[in-house]
Image (cartoon, rainbow, N blue to C red):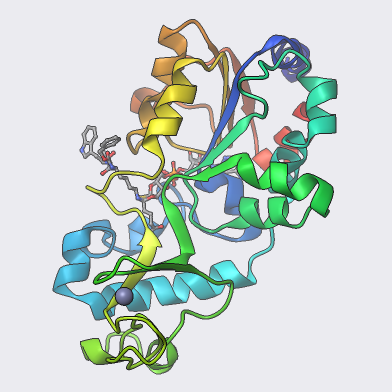
Length: 291
Ligand code: BJW
Ligand code: ZN
């Protein structure tokens, strides 16, 4: 059955003009990063309303920073898995020429929209040799931001670094449950910076992720591409969180096809009117589908 689906999925790839991949936490499950919902999900152990909302950061920046600091450390230690690799390889011009020769030059590459903030897909794309790297890096939109970015709450300066959070010494040493004074939290320009010593303002930094109630990044581009998408791949997402939860409906309404790669068949509220369904760990189902 899965073999038949694979053949027709490959036919759809070959004839599609505008392919979009929307990825969720299941993509990084095999890299050891927990999903948000379902078995072992992050929100089973942590209250999202106290951690993933701008109001939560305003009320208790120390608690929120400690939560993101720990997760940043585990994302730093995680390695991309076979599914990240398969998606990144798919974005390469030679793979596209072979598997998706009908792409409209107006939409030259499939667009990889990830809801994940772990930067694992970006890390694979950035590891390509220079000839492919530039094009590959253009394929991706991290719509819920990136845990390796910080944004200054005063001057809006954004910094991305695959290193411990700048100025995070106090966070690294804080015992769980302690409340750090705001001056010890990461500051714009470095720990404890209250002057322009580093040419920065010393304001409080926040994690560069998108919280509930905030507008996801690059929505204009996403909406435009989605309107013309004729094949959407939904990889490891529960389709619980909007706007990503609505993308499949948009594509279907405009006559496009949807392929789901998920550990479980999607039922109930999460059900997507899929044309192709590949049930299983995406680190196993994606590589043969995009080889
Ligand atoms: C595997 C696998 C394996 C496991 N292989 N598969 C009512 C109606 C409509 C909207 C709303 C509403 N009430 C509130 C809203 C808005 C709200 C929302 O949608 N809330 C819902 C909970 C109802 N949305 C927002 O606030 C968003 N902003 C917004 O809507 O702005 C308005 C606007 C939009 C557009 C234009 C203009 C204005 C912002 C959402 C921000 C989400 N932030 C988080 C946290 C990021 C930071 C952090 O990590 O702490 O983003 S929440 C969390 O959920 C994270 C994820 O990106 C997101 C999605 O989760 P995902 O990826 O689907 O993970 P899971 O765990 O849910 O699912 C994993 C799936 O993988 C499962 O299906 C498994 O089966 C599968 N799986 N292993 C394959 N090996
Ligand atoms: Zn600043």
